[in-house]
Amino acid sequence: MNTRSKFNVLIFDTETCFKNEHNSIIAEIGWTFGNVLSQQDTPTSRRFLVADTLCRPDYWLHSQKLQNVHESLKGLPEGDRTAYKMDMRYTEYLEQIQRLNRISKTDKVMCSWQYILEQLTKDLSLVDSVGAYNMPFDIRAIQTTSKRFHHTHYGEIERLPKFCLMDMFGNHVINLNYFRMIDSLDEDEKKFFMSKSGKNLGYSAEIMARYISEDRGYVELHTAKEDSLIEYELAMYFFQNYKYDYFEKYHNKIGGVHWSQIRDRLSSAEKERQREINFGGDLNE
Image (tube, rainbow, N blue to C red):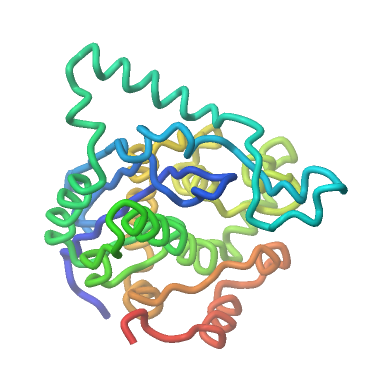
């Protein structure tokens, strides 16, 4: 039995460019850190806009391969692309920057990627582990952005044990008790726990937040700081209810979540059995 009463974690979230060749370049990053084992602890949160990304409007043009535009273009090189739409989030970010300018707060929020990494490094030095809801995506975004702007990877985040909240919730929290809860709902209530397609049960951070808070109307804002806050709450819920399982099964062991296992209502024991078969080992090995 794990009896520790203090375990500091940092949960981070990223919002990135997408639908073009600049996929995974971070425009906004936020994180929340504190003692996840204490309900009395007040976590610290930060949020930054990445100046390097937001000063490049070309990063926000959605594009597609020319060979996909028309049958006559199929012989063109695969890398040739054409822009077709500006990402509306870019306009929203510019409006945020204008509001920050009016209150002289721009330089505290919109910062260079180098400065952001320096602050992240300081905060990582205070924690025992680092996590995200979709850790493979978010860690890839940090490294892609670092290589784009600094031509090298960001080593500090690799020194810490990692965990993925989607792995933990999809494989462990979505269990037989969860399915009984779903079956107790009427059809109008069930829709709040379905995937975007409406065909299967979902397992996004938004849906898991609805579950643990019993707030069917909760909507994830898709802003980095606020999303890191609710994901920190998800981490607290997991550690409060499944602390032993975390250290035994998920600490620095990141597995995948497959929608078909949730569709088929596999028990958490069966999902974790399959996870162990497919698992490649500790991340530091």
